[in-house]
Length: 386
Ligand SMILES: Cc1cc2nc3c(=O)[nH]c(=O)nc-3n(C[C@H](O)[C@H](O)[C@H](O)COP(=O)(O)OP(=O)(O)OC[C@H]3O[C@@H](n4cnc5c(N)ncnc54)[C@H](O)[C@@H]3O)c2cc1C
Figure 1 (cartoon, rainbow, N blue to C red):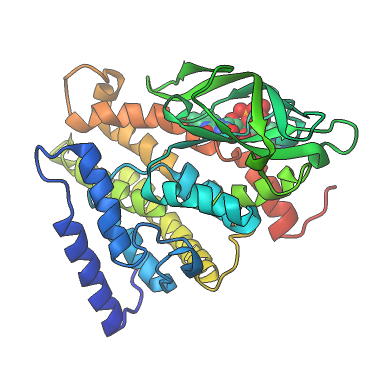
Figure 2: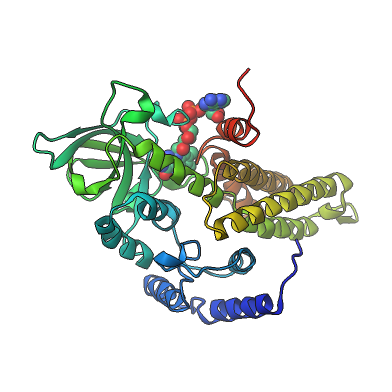
């Protein structure tokens, strides 16, 4: 997509390019040290370590175009590993609903990437219908702590997390959304057991977490008891906006075109095959449309608005596009895609199949596609249930 850049925007783009070039990992460098140094230097640029945070919490206050430029430039750069749970998901909740003490206690470590967080929402029997969750939190008679017992599932990176932000049930007598409380729970303690789940692509990123009679001080409760659902809903919108991965899809589609050009088809290449070319063209058009939607969402965010239910459009279409690219990559790899893990055929076919299998989850986590369609129908289009 071409958008009009002002001379200041071109200057900003050059500044971003220079920064990324200077701070790329040097061969043989200690990764952990480079990661921490990178974020320190990005912070010193005036909030470049937390581009989406509001100015009052240290964010850079970029215009939508500057956000767009950052997205475009960073997607191909070598940036350090950064999970969204602290920076992108818990931080906005703390800013909106946390006490001053909680903000002072947790935000600095989140910003410095000193502490890893995981998201304890889903449970066996409570995924799409999250409000059915049963993990119980009972307040002590003296009101000082909760005792938490239950099971969380699909918890991404729980095995590496120091803390979990967790939805618990404190009341099961009324409407199910009203008895939910948002607690922050340290992971490294007796009573927390993390069991790995190996997914279709062979990776270990998700886990089952059993919580048994874990005591959580009331100071670790965000906002009011029983209001966790309201806070969690806001967080889901931030999560969905981040999951669309538009810039990554733009790069992935360019890679796919290059890969297809390396696959012989008669005297020419797969990229010259009209049927394949037409699928790529359809993808390009859809991606362009989602890119514009993301730009609108960036513009809303820059003027201080929350992402809103429109984030479901980005999540739905963005993750579908990711899967279509993964599917076409497997198609381009042909029979070699089936032999993934074995060093034969096109190099891209090996990672292509792994990406395809792992990517089946993209339209499930953060709320399954069917659920996003419900949100769009109800809250964006204003349709009534028939
Ligand atoms: C890789 C991965 C990582 C994850 N990471 C986390 C994490 O870090 N933390 C966390 O808390 N959770 C996480 N999740 C859980 C994720 O949010 C849930 O899997 C998701 O919300 C779907 O819930 P479910 O798996 O229980 O499926 P279900 O809710 O049982 O859904 C099963 C099927 O029924 C459909 N369905 C359900 N309700 C409706 C409806 N009303 N209308 C139409 N169709 C419907 C769904 O679309 C789906 O196809 C992760 C999941 C995956 C796969």
